[in-house]
Structure formats: structure tokens, C-alpha cells
Length: 459
Image (tube, rainbow, N blue to C red):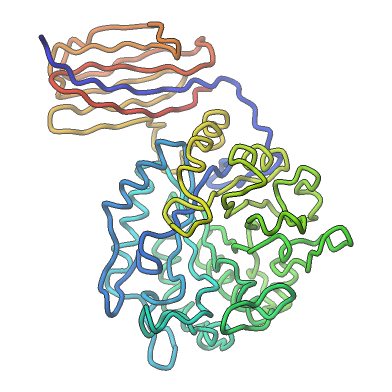
């Protein structure tokens, strides 16, 4: 009895699938729908850089496994938190001035970007969080929070921009899967504003707007990357102020930022709002079909950057209603936060299904020289499957003969099959006139068994 190595590659043919989104994010010339997840950390505030007490906590194997998992379920974008409360990065002097980034910072960050790139995943690095005005110093070290002065004091803000932000922006100016820089997560909780301000330290609205504007200017000045901000709720990120809702206003419009910091590059490229069930009763709800995106009178594309587990909506309803309401995508909370507000199993199947329907607008191509579908390299087998010009190509070398391939449909019916007669070569399969559907390429190599599954879109 002959042992075989079995590779099963799921290839999805979606011909002439329309995109119902009125809004999307244009990046590197392509319109994208965000089909995403918040990682948002493996080690809070310490995935990039070296903690002065705990050392370097970056876990490259964990990120590799994470991005593999995300790719298998059709995720095209992940939101990753970087500084958080400042416990590990950037580097601070005793007086609270930012002096730079530690020696491991770029090595760790590079590794994360490259692993995400390999798995066709765009990243939104979220630099700061409202945690920077909390106080975790007793449990996480001298720099874990208590950084209101970094916001209030423009000289300290500038020290961060000059010694940390600009070096980051320049270093990743050409990083193909860097979708956007997010300046801060849910800053409203750090601000003395109606309904906000629940952290130990609080800053004035114009101080936070200036903090955001100064960073937005620097990013726009030193790169062509987009800039956003993770607003805690559309309550603070809408121009619709009526008796219907309790909207406070749009703190993040161009005009609002430039009143606080009057410079033309102080603007966001798109808005990012969050949803949790407490907002449902107050109608701050992007998934309510009675309140489409147009109701909120916003002048930029909007993504739902955090969507927590809901008693009001299933994950599928969040994706479908977000689409109907014309948002540019959803990032669920979360892959690994482990905080009780949502987990990967709640949404992964729905993300995959959504990626199937909207594949043309989800699959990231900005890092590809060709539209590669899968590449598997081992010591005894090396093969690659990719799509180009209405054809599937299977490139292979180091094949142990005999070896065979076949294509079956979702019902298990064999569509095509053949033998690989040489241990190096390329098999070309014309799919121009194939019907829309799900197909599997099954490849049999000697002498073991494995299973691989991916999908792609053919136009």
C-alpha cells in the first residue's frame, strides 16, 4: 500500500460578484472592504520593545500562528496596539520627556509586519490608548500610565513626535501592508467632556485634539500613509446633533482638529468608531438599520473599529447591517484580549463567509508581485498555486513521483484530474468559463498526509 502526501487547496471562483458598499477605503489604488479583527495584543503594551524590568516579551511564534489563523478565515486587516499606556515604549526620561525607542523595538515591529504581510493581512497599529491617563505603575512599572503631561505639554508631545513617531513613520513609509496609523484608542475616556472622562487623569478636549493634530501632521508630512483615530462611540464622532440622539458632536473633524492645532496636515483620512451594547439604547448604533451612515452627516469613510459581542446582534448581522448601512468594514473584538467582550470563536466563521462573498474587495494585493494563492515549502516538496489572466497555475519542484492532481466541486464531483510527470514544472488550468462556486484542488504527493485550505477570487 502506497503512502501519499495529500494537499487539499480550496479555491473559490467568484465571477462578477458585485460590491454593495457605497464606501470603502482606497489604499494603494485599490478599494478595500475591511474584514477584520482586533488582535489587539499578546502582551499588553509589550509586544514591541523591551520593558525595563520584564525584558523583551515579543513572541514571534504566537504572531505567526495568529496570522495563519486569521488568513485561513478570510481576515484582511488586524488592529494591533503598540504603546498602550507607555509601559514598554517609547523610552522616557525621569521628567517624562520621550527620548526614543529601545534597541528591540524595530526588530520586533518588523517581524510582526512581515509575518502579517506573508499572510496577506493589513495592519492598523494603534499607538496610544486612553490607558495612558490611567495608573498601572504599581503593577506594570514606572511608565505604565500617568502620561497626561504628554498630551498637555506641547514640548513633551513634540519629544514623542521627534524621537519616536517620526522614526517609526519613516521606517515604515513603504511598508506595503501598513493600512493606517491610529493615533489613540478611545481618547474620549481621557477627556473632560460630556459622557466621557472616566480615567484618573483627564485632559481638556482641545489638549487631546492638539495631541492628535500634531501627530497627524507628522505622519502626513513624512509618509503617504493614512491616519485615523479610534473614537469610543459615534456619540463623539458625528455632526448630527438632534433630539433623536444624544450626540455630543464631532471632536475629530478637520475643523475641530485645526481649531486646536491650526495646521493643514492636521486631519484624519477616515473615521473609526466603536460599538458595544451600552450604545444600543442611546441609538449610537452603526448596526441599526434605521440610522444608516448618511444619518450621521460624516464627510469621510468610516470603519467600525471595535464590535464587541452583542446581545442585540449576531456577528453575521453586524457584518450584514454594517454593509447595508454603508460602513467600510468591521473589526471584531477580539482575537486575544480575553476580557469578556468578545472572542475569536464568536466571529471567525462569519468573517470567512463574508470574505467569500466579497473576496474581490477583501483580498490584499498591495504586497503581491503576482496574485499568489498559496505557497508551501518543505524539504521534500515545494509548490505554489496562483491566479493570473483567468488561469490557475500550479508551480512545483522537488516532487516525489508518482504524483497526481484533481479538481472537485463542493458536491465532491471530479471536474478535472491529471498526473504530474516531472519533478519540476508548472501546470496551467484555464478557468475562464467555469461557473461560480467552490472548488478544491487535491494534490497527492508521496509519502505523508497533510491538509491545507485557502480561497481566492477569479474575475
